[in-house]
Length: 413
Image (tube, rainbow, N blue to C red; front, side):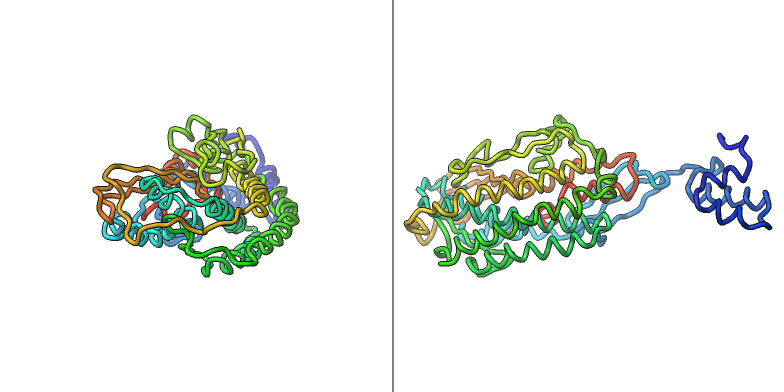
């Protein structure tokens, strides 16, 4: 080894402050120093006499950084990740099968429970699939309100993720700040929908009820509040030297890899994959708003982080353009009590907080679907985790996984 020609004192000196402790002890012999260095090499895994045997550990299904019951079987050499095999299904509830026994209006409340942080966006996807199948014209008022609420949900989702990513990397203050500010969005939504997490506010044809009288006022007050905090988020976490060291250059995913794995949402756009459904296939009132598709070329954990923070700002821009221009009119189209989609297949995609959510419906002309399949953004994003974490340490695995912003029930369904 390289240190054979060095004295024990020199080797101890390379261990930093420990040299000061040992060298100042007048009765510390050269042999004791040598033994100490040997011990440190064994602890750190640098001892050539110790074999680098591959072994496996289970990370989860109950683990703080998996944010749900996700089990990762991690193959390690020392502390270095060799590969990962995700095991999912611990919160599988058979939602896709359940839809075959429920009417199209009843299905809405099930979609809240996929990615529960994108609840109304999930609702929106099913509503659009049904409305397009029935060729129903939706009131403009509904389109504007749905777009505004979807963007509020996106902000709330990204705020929770921001706080949790900070916590995963040891910045607990970010966790409290993120939840503090998310409560402001939830208050606005609760006042309008009656719920704080699982809203079920949309129905095929429109909304459950019209917007609250304070809807526009409350939103404008919130946007003013949140805009003043974005610099604080940067000061607290984005520009923190420790956070930057633990995210920059880690878990790099190229554009080609993002496409191959089907990684969409902010995680895909951080790799310069232009995949924003709101831009590529506009729906609701997104064609009425001028906003940027956030793209980065870095493709690492830090740029996935930056993409979400920038999306919060763009969501606020969208809301500000629409909130004062909500058209008058009905909050729902005239719909039959029992909806029956004509026989055929229907597909609808929307931009959820974590990427593209697709809803595929097969109808036999009955009041319930013959088959309903959800294309989950989280499942595709999880598929890239093995590639992104190879040859990194376990602590880096936590940072990389957090940058993908996984929600486990959306994977299990």
